[in-house]
Length: 184
Image 1: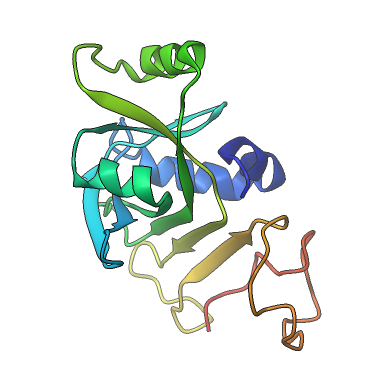
Image 2: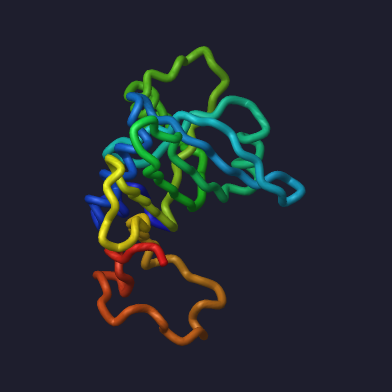
């Protein structure tokens, strides 16, 4: 799984679009999905923090923190915008940040209250998706379908995918997939 920094270096425009949606109201806002102990999903509002050094979240003692400590898989979705139906989605693994200097630096950037029982997690990125929809009520030539950009971490293994025939379009981006295609 790639760090936010590695993802942003690889696809800067996509990362900027996702960052803008996460921070559209100033501080980051989104919905964090975690995996409960019984395997079911759990969804929580959170305030993710995007810095040049990574994608982070301060998580207080709660079921979501226990989920992340037990099973770091996550999905993060942007908070709905009042201006459009655009949306951002990230998925990967969350790891606790244990280096005191790094925790202090991110806490200073995020203005995290020191007296609160929070733990800092860094979110790696396995999948990033940005969906842009029509703005202003104008119909698009493609019938109004949303434009979807997807980034998959090129270093992540995809179980069960290696044996499937390649059915992707012939026009591919840097990592073997077309990040400019629209949703089907």
